Image 1 (tube, one colour):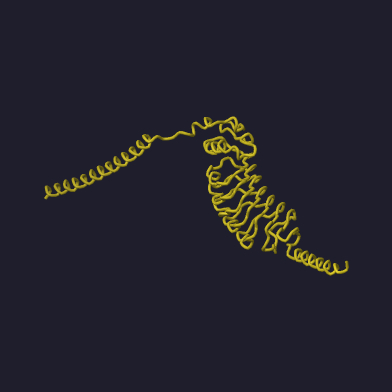
Image 2: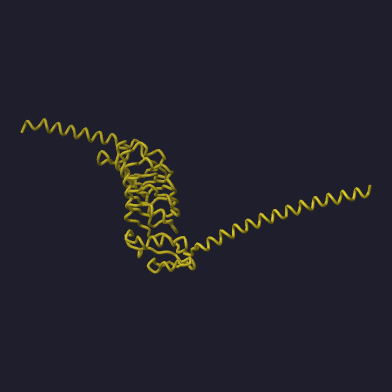
Length: 291
């Protein structure tokens, strides 16, 4: 058994070295349960921690008071695949901030103070599979191209925000989308909602609770109704389309009005010109008769 003692000492020495190195590279007030995970959740942070290891893969920053992410923050963390920023004080994400996260698979921005998701927010994070944006009580606008380039995105959470409408293009350009959560928003059943309603009916299998879990407000009296009580006929007045004959009439009418306007202007200009020449001629005759 004695020959085993040197091996045990060597193993203990290596373990101590690993643990010491792990603790040395871990940001202050954070935990690092493994060499590639940094857990700073619930530490009362008001800004991003310093000295995050460059090879971090999982960064947990939930339940803090972080108000912003510097636009160059993720440039150095090319191995990052999991970023949890839920329940902070983020009010906006600067365009391009996440465009350098080429390996990012999971991103949680839920339960913050985001007000809009503009175009270019996520760059083209083609590896992103799950995106959480729910429970942002002030989030009322999502740009139609907000998710452009997220070709691998399978799960999108937009529930319990302040969205009254959403352009269908924001969802239809996600080829890998399998699950989308939209319930709990103050949707309004007006013409701006018509296209989204049609998309939801065709893709109800992507809604965890189906359309049964969604409601919208009637524009007349504000009464909330389930989407199951509506149909495409509910938006019949929004579906007025022009026939080819109607378009030709409109085009011809526009051309005719333009031609008439040009002819009228030419006639008036000619009349004024002739009147001026006549006035000069009459004045010349009077001067000659006086002489």
